Length: 448
Ligand code: DOR
Image (cartoon, rainbow, N blue to C red):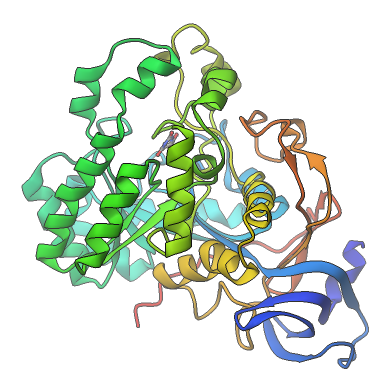
């Protein structure tokens, strides 16, 4: 298939993943949107993309992407991140606010939105919840921030809000604009007290699951008192999953996210890959992985986000002898779909549950479900064709991200993205990005 098929008005598939089931159907596109879903083989158009027996999914909505743009474009920028996203079947990137400058004001939001004009997939911006942004919550919401992000640890001090009274005021302000608060549950003070060395075991020791679970409890109490919805970021441990399940049973307005690496990798991978496998929270044990899959199946964890967090290889290499000298994080946009869908199949889970976790629910939670997340009439024609009968190894040398390393390198997968379409335009096909692709569009949170 080539980019000549860009004018395609029909995607014909034997296995199109609709909310009601996976079915043979013609998806008819007019302009940027899906105009009709018709009987297989019945629609007529000059260009038809025939997906055959490959899977046709709604484009992934990745609500956890560190684009590094503006400010650290040597590590990544909207162009390279979005090319990686397109290669990974991600048609909406939601950018995290730890850019330079931080997204904590309307001016910083506008700067990041301008940086996003380089994107070839659609994007949204998440704003920082912090003392520096407390007066700006209404302005940021008015500009379309899809979430606010409260860091309780896990990053530089400039990101973290420790003061409980300020946290409480931030929850009140976010509730006031009908927003959602992403919370990174951590406690940098406790982590510092537990510091005992720079090997993988010592890093694990300094970041026990109890810190994640404990930090979450405090935040949920404050959020509940202000009527604020919380989305827990990157849940990594069985203990946290259990606490989330209990809180949800008690009526907390709480949803949770897990990352592909916490679902698929363990401490063994961390030890094997060293600094290239270092991320926060750290990779954990096999029993944690099992608990996260159970929580996902039970709906206590609702979304999967890549936590794409690229750094220079040189910076990573600085942690060879002492992991504390390397920045945590690795790229994830290009491994997300192939690696997770492979395991999804092995566990016998449904296509519909996959789409809910990677597209539909994030689109709902972050206020873009009127446009994104589902193959349905009226939604953007964001479609991905996936061959889920391949057998190949992930190769980080092929990454379109600027960061060409990954603890998924060499892992065998049975799924590969063959084509990605954003609002009716093919931006990636058969291993190549269309460099003439239209610019991605800023998506604003629908506040209704
Ligand atoms: O390991 C991480 N790195 N975890 C995060 O949450 C942030 C990220 C980064 O920005 O590098």
